[in-house]
Length: 418
Image 1 (cartoon, rainbow, N blue to C red):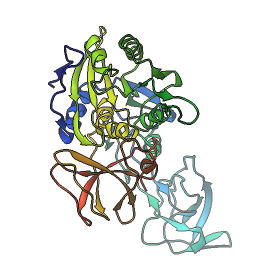
Image 2: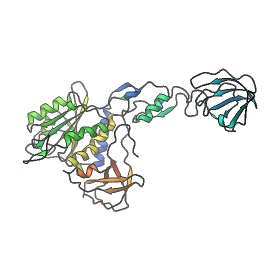
Image 3: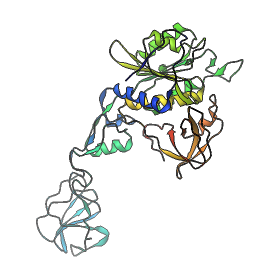
Image 4: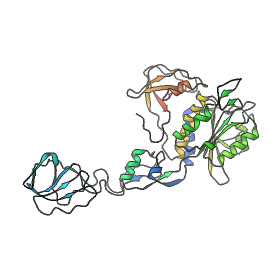
C-alpha cells in the first residue's frame, strides 16, 4: 500500500485531495493489513467484538432427538401402557415393547424405539392406558436438523452480537477467538475551546471531546476517560508530546482541529516529527474538508494510526464515517462496510467535483431518506436528528426519487437496525 511521506516543511502545500471512495478503500486496506491480534474470550465478554475464525458446531444441532411438544413418546399403534416419564436433561431408557409409552416433556430426549410422539392435548388416559392418534408429521427435532457437527455457521469477520453469542453457546462453545478490540484515544486541539459552561468572549464550547469517544465505542473501540486529552496547547512541542504519549498505548489516535496549514495548525509538523506516513492527506468531500489518516510503525513493529478530524463538529463526524469507520473495520478483520441504498424524498444538490455527504433521516419501513436542516459544518443540530449521510457522487446532483447510497451512523455493539 503506497503512502505519502509527511511534508518536510511545516507549511508545505497540501497534495490534491483523494476521491472519497478511493480514500475509504485505501484506509480499509491498511487497516486490514494491520489487523489486531487474536484473543480467546469467554462468551459473556465478546459482545461487539469480531470473529477471528469461522464459528462451527461442536456437535449436531440438536445433538439428539428432542420432543417439540409435551405428550407421550409411544411405540406401536396403541393404546399404550405407561412405563415411565422422561424430562428434559435426562437420558431415557429405550422403549423395547410395542404398545408402551413414556410421558415426555418439551425438549426432552426421545427414547430409542419410539415411533411417534402424541400431544398431551390430543390424548386421553383411562384405565391406565393412553389413547389418541399421533399426527403424521413427527413431533420431534432430528439430530442435525439445524446443523451438523463441524459445519461452518458464520465466517471469520462476523461481528459478534447477542444472537451470535447465543448461537455459539448452543453449539457448545465456552469461549470465542476474536480480534482484540481497538484501543483509541482522542486529542482535542484548540486554545479557543471551553470545556465547561456556555460559549462567551470569543471562545466556543468543545463539542467533540465529549462526543467522539461515544462514536468510537460504537465502532467497537475501547476508550477510557484518561484517553481523552485536551484542549492541547497550540504549540508544536505540546502537540508532539501529547501525540507521542497517546500513541504509547493506543492503536488509533483521533485528533480534532489542526488539519489545515495555518499559523496554529501543528498536526502536520507533529506527524513529520514523529516519522508518520500519510495514508490519506485530504479527501474531496464536503463537508469534512480537510481530513487525514497517517500511519506510524513503532520500534516494537506495532502499527498505529492517527486520524486527523477537522475542528468543525459536523465535518469531524464526516471524517469519522469516511476514514475511521473503514479503518476500524479492517483492524477488526471485518469486511469493508457495504453502503445500503435509500430513496431520496427531496432533491439534494451536488458539491461540484467533491462527494457530498448530506445528512438524512430515514423512514425505515419505506427506505425513504429525508434531508434534515441545520447541516452547516459547525452545526450539530441536524446530526442529532439524523440516521446517516446520503452519498451524492462528484459531478452529480440527486433528484427526489433517486436511489443513492447512505453511510449509516454507527449503532451500539449488539444493536441491530430496525
